[in-house]
Amino acid sequence: MFQKIVLSVVLFCALSVVSFFLIIKVIDFNEYKPKIQKAIKESTGYDLSIQGDIVLSLSPVGVSISDIQVSNPYYKEDIPFVKLGNFDVAVEIAPLFHKEVKVKHIALENLYVLVEKTKEGKYNFEIPSSKVSEKTKQEDKSLAVEESEVIYPLVNVTQIKFGDAHLEYKDEKSGKIINADKINLNVNDINYDPSKNKLYSVIFKANAKVGNIQYDAINVKDIEMVFDMKEAIANLESLKYTIFDSVMNGSAKVDISGKLPKVLLKNKIVDLKLDQVSNYFLGSEIIKGVANGDLKFAFSLGDVRTIKSTLNGTLQLSGENIEVKGYDIEKILAIANNTKITPNSLNFASLLIGPWDAFKGKDSLVKQINTTLDIGYSEVQLSDVALSIAKSRIAIKGALQMIEEKFLDVKVALLDAKGCSTFEQTLTGTFSKPMVKLDAVSVKTLATVALSLVKNPKNDEPVQVQVPNDNCVPFYEGVVKQP
Image (tube, rainbow, N blue to C red):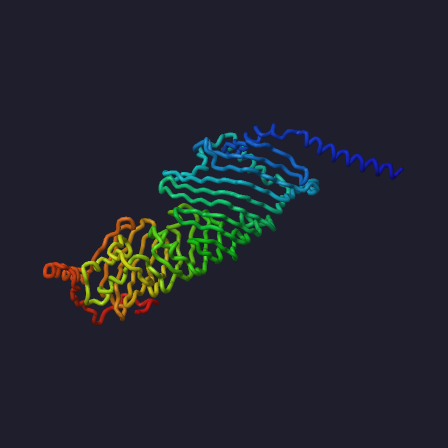
């Protein structure tokens, strides 16, 4: 008798479970799409469009939704700022009976997010506060009153995955565009500490790969990282990426506790390909060789102006035996020797601002070069910038203003063995429209050469010019030595 009762109970439970799944299978969840879209609209103000199907899976138990789009009805409503190819969530059945939601995984495939900043400084995802319905306000007040009385089920998420995501940022005022594609993120070991607030309560480990980040002509690709999140700070102890066709390794820290994420980046630079660097900054691969050094940057993430205005840190690069293709920098040696100045050698500021026509000719060899920059909130100090060529040294000092993109009295000088300036020119103006300002010594030199043109119309003999150099104050005392 007892066995019959047990068997009856088991059969009843089995039939109930089978019936439950059969009923679930029969239900067409697509009928609920209008209700879901309406609920999202009323609670957030966004237009949600589910163009694909809502499908229930039984192994594992979960829901899959495809082809989702989110748009802002108050900003280009016909252009969604979020597209999602597929959304999957899988849960465990048993914990549900104990009012616990245990999520096996959440997966988002082919996510596309477009962030646009208008000329007025507004973002495409912002909903005007005046557009929030009175009904929504009342519901928010009601929820706030009852929140302390509601007992939410414990939610435990084991894994979150992003596959082949794409992010795009556009600034209509500056015209700048930042693209990040082929983003794959796998978040594991997720823990939640209810005793802490907001982001401080979340702890997890993750690994990520990003195929490419493009900003103007700068291309950072093959990004790989392993990191952990704790106390709203992501620590990246293993960071690898390729920039200017050179592989970089380092570490980073991202603090997301504030209004804007703050980034601290440390890198050891090994064998940086200078031909790729010159191609970006100068428009052609005229420099050949490698450089080594270190960088340490801190900045806040945001638009281009935000990054420039908050950037601070140091950059140090050095190299030896660097080839300069097609330009005869040794033409300026006459100036360096102080006693042989020719008219074609005077405007060596062309080395920085171009055009470089005065130096076209055979290839040149830079024996040693060093660049040390101290960056402090939009201003770049040229702390130790110099190079040596054959028997001469050239040094540069001053500062650059990054936001306004202008020179702050940048001085370029040819040096003697003591590090004193034998001839110098000062650059002012903007990066796009630089101006050359001459000091008293340079004016005297130019006057001497101009006078020689009257006496020597052929302009083929060097002019003898004596430049005072006794008891001088050294212009440069950095790491680049006199050859």
